[in-house]
Image 1 (cartoon, helix red, strand yellow):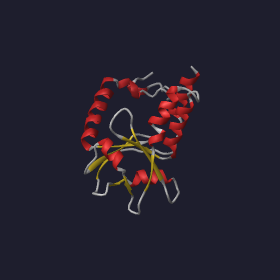
Image 2 (cartoon, helix red, strand yellow):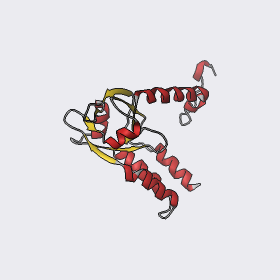
Image 3 (cartoon, one colour):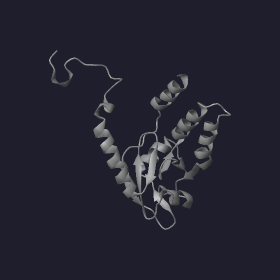
Image 4 (cartoon, one colour):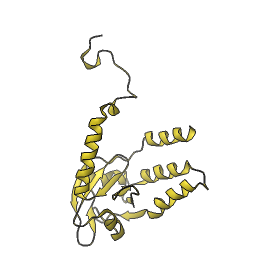
Length: 177
């Protein structure tokens, strides 16, 4: 029970970095990809230089990316397991050992390592997709597929967006109570 509560706390934490929206960008012959300006700004958080942490998602062929907030989420999630727990070690190896720390050039591009490009099937273009405290890099075709699956799941579960933490208002929804 305590572990579930801690994970819920991590998920609900108010991290400062937010990545929103989707952007299709070209990948040049040297593997450089432009990251959207608002993403770079969120990563910089008032500092001149920003680092980007990227790793291959272990459940599908996309690249997970983010700043220090993402790293904190990962570390806290892993810390919920006992130090000698096999599940913890699996997460450490699957995620932490694969993280690549990337820097931006003067034009806002990153050089995606070939291993990451190959993993995600990236060649000439990439979709950079913001999803809150992190963003994903994937092929534009995969993004369209993921988007259609997400739309179907959202349509099948309309109550998921209910304002569970918002107070009830009398008269809300056109009722005159």
